[in-house]
Image (cartoon, rainbow, N blue to C red):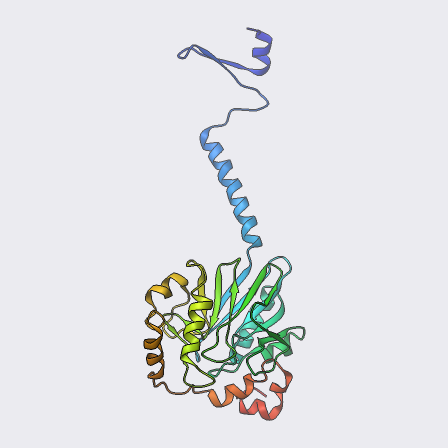
Length: 297
């Protein structure tokens, strides 16, 4: 054995196993615990990088009409869109958008709502570059109209437009394939569905929309509705296929259920529909119309 090399690089003679182990002074031996700490640090670094690139997503709630609003954005470009904003909570939404440093590009509505006044008009005043978005079949005014198969989004947030009429003619579901989730509006609710007794409602159309456009998505997709009245925030395709007390029934039974709900009309119907038919358009803020919808002067 070359003693100079032993002195320079290091050799360990393990008498028990009658073999020589060589180690380099330039690559010191590290304990298993030290190696596990290094591996854990690398894993945290990778996870932090992945989290930094994950799309921004916030679910917000308005308590009077039990409406969910969704804010989605790109963490890199800070461009964002908002789905189903409510007039009464525009201050909250504006504050959050500014706090997150977002550039609001689109204000989407899943349909012309009858139970609350949309916040897209007021958001347009505060974010003049924002475009309001509605289905071309909605009958309402907007800056941009979407149809079946269209996509709309910001950078790494891309939503497919799927028509889901039945609650209204202009209902759409926005599908985020990359995020494996969908925003179902009033078409499919959590363990329920939108009513079909006014505003172009049709129970048969709704049943087909739900089964063909929403429940046809992969089972693991999360579903985010426009409303919930029991404090539940999210469901999934699998859950609704198994547990929805309406849509799990045959078509004929479903139609009979929907035709006999006997629900009262929404309290804000008279002021919501006129305002929402000019969704996101400045006419909403004419003084007389603003009085009708109960807006602030």
